[in-house]
Image (cartoon, rainbow, N blue to C red; front, side, top):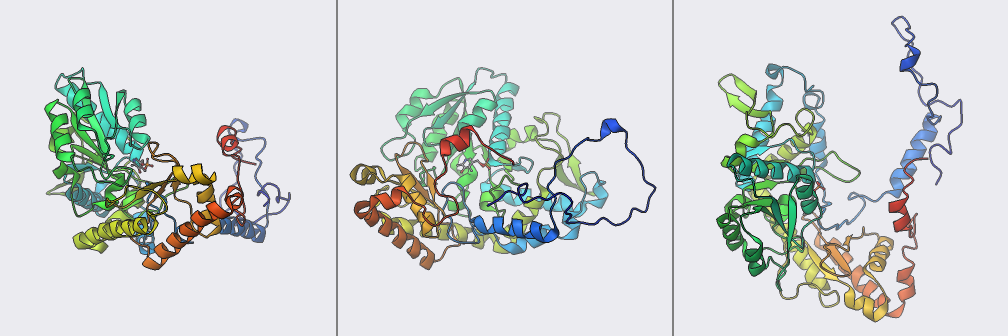
Length: 473
Ligand SMILES: *Cc1c(COP(=O)(O)O)cnc(C)c1O
């Protein structure tokens, strides 16, 4: 397919501007460009170009998209409409508070619901992504220790199954990382943990359920070990989909949590945003939350400012449209509906796991939560067919590949997260396809090595694409 620059023909125009009704003004030449290389196209060419491009993309509206750890689920379209209502979409961040009472009420209500869902005392909506929330959460932890004069706490403990953003955020926040190994049950090894906690521990970062889709049963003991050593507990809430309305991080002993509204609360993601990673904390950390907060007073809603705040972490108040969708989703589902969404997500994952586990090795004999990881290590040894080959062959079957080669502690990993919105029929189709690919790996491996056969792009050179990206024409 040609790029928009290749189909450009000088002189073509897609728009005709209305005649200007004010006197013309010539800008100073220091403020203008000599040259602007924009493509020239007629309206019809422009429409056809972008329509063709959109047809080559695969999204959750096209088919099954079981990308583990990313939660590519269906997000009700009505919530997009709610977010684009004039009063929400046209509000300006510099308006006076008496003109934006509704927007402030929305932010305050959403924060209160998220605090209730996570078992936290206070929530800020400011961070614009999960990783951004992690960075802020760690700043809160840092400030907490500093305020107590406990300045030797420079280390963050991170299990080896963690999402890469955990150690990355901790490092950016100025901490040193200590990795703890998983035990045979793929949870945190308690003896290892006891050996590494100490006076230099600032916090432990944990995802529960873990990135393997397994619930960390020892969480209360883990919480005790870290707290007794004077450290705090950070909850990576990206996997809240499995436990929402069932258990609360605050009750498990966590002090800080981030959520990914673009994974759990009705904002589609991919393509760079907009996302939102609200951070909740227990009351002793609340004074350090970013300014401004929103409070309800006798005169209505107002911005609040805390002297001890770590500062602002985004322009204005974060991605407001995402808040509208999240609140619409929460009030539509209600407490029971949120719980049911989690229960169905867990049921779907267990169903797909059960239909595959005789061929695709996973944690046998254990229930998973909302996602599970299979290892194709044996299949690769037997047939030469890798996780990458199977993932690529799934594209020909009309299914988006699952997450590949993550978490790093599982070799030849494929990680499936079916989400709560998929039907049994869809799960059966996926299971049938994967079972037939397993057969094919034994009878006709070459076909898998060269897959996909029907996609617009076959096998790009992934190393070259990462090292030498050509991002524009
Ligand atoms: C997605 C994810 C993150 C990071 O969230 P972003 O919004 O992509 O920055 C962190 N931890 C886990 C377990 C995740 O799945």
